[in-house]
Image 1 (tube, rainbow, N blue to C red):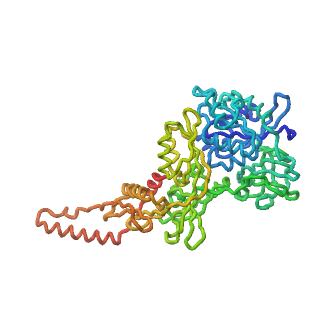
Image 2: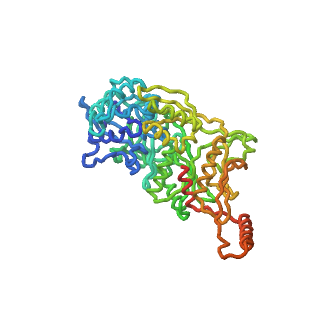
Length: 600
């Protein structure tokens, strides 16, 4: 048993792909938490998707015992955090469970958007930050430039930075000693009542919900009676323990320790990340700070490609929801696409990961509709409704004004890309409020953009105009009034609900033209003319026509009077006119797939 003063709780924060997980592997090896024969690359990344993309999606805590140079044993609790902006609330909860952070900076890339965002997040939580310049053994490493950036941008003295390489193990001993001497012991330990922070949770089909917790005060024994302070729900501790890195059951978790608690609860949604646990017979009065409800920001419809897969999709989204409380879904029906689900995600990466997991883990072929955000619609009759589906937008006569969510984005990019970036931001209805020079080659632009404009291709275009060197981080900002309208696509005067979108009035015509022209190429021709129209509030703003297939009715006429041919053609013309009145256009499933794929 290690005394509280010799416990160090810390996390590793960095921009995506700066080497967090690789460094975690070296720390596990050096502290002999994992034997060499059990070691594998990216040990803490359990999902195939995490390994392939080199990103961390779920946070992974692990406890390590370290014999320091002063001859004393220390207990290190490392929390490996997700790096992407979509998971910033999970990162903030992971940081709240720590007293210090290793801030990793790639020696060749330098300080990037999320490096700065995570450093500010750690600073606002009052954490002690140890800067680590990683990948110093790369030929392209420029330690002097990165050291200058650490001082200029992060305002941390460069001589505090440790030079390291997660790949070759350089600097790992210095990092471990810095954790001992530069990070403080556990805080808030003198609170009279037992309190623990839930910083993540996971569902196990046998055990139910497993909470990842950090104990701040008191002791949590096995079989103790728990209370969840956000909603006063009571439950019992079935099992308690810590990660080494596999779960190891214990009799109790005490002050400063990080581990897991198995409860009898079967629904992840009932355990909220950031919640405070206490014991029901000796409950604390106040929660630990920083708790908030996580709400989805991006919505999209998911439909099975084969309609007979609906039940399979229903079970699959239910299982994913068990492990991810931030993912929401409710069933919806589309005339064109059949039965499916309206799903809510934290952001675009979250949406991509959920869809990829449904395809891989549950073997489903999916169509996803155009992503949308939550709009606030103020009604002329008074009151406000939130709309995330274009089909739910009330009639224009009932709408007083529509507000859309905006973001404050920080874009790091090379100097020579400023002109192209400003053009991209302006095209996306954004404004640039500030430009700061990071060093002689890079700048940081602060931009204000509508959230729905960055949903589809913004990141790809950013990488394209900056030749791969640009990076972006964003925070949600306030809602702003905007001239938004619902644009419908009419095929033969019939609206097709799957193609409805909410767009800005100024962009409606361009987007309408693009969709109609794409549909013209994809839809099969009929025996009569088909009108493809984009309409806003009953007014047609774009049109394409698919010409009719013409059967050669005069083929049987050999010679003779011209009036015979004319008579046959007139008869055909009458038939086509009648067919156009009663004919209906069935849009094949492949057309929806092609349109929705190309628009997303």
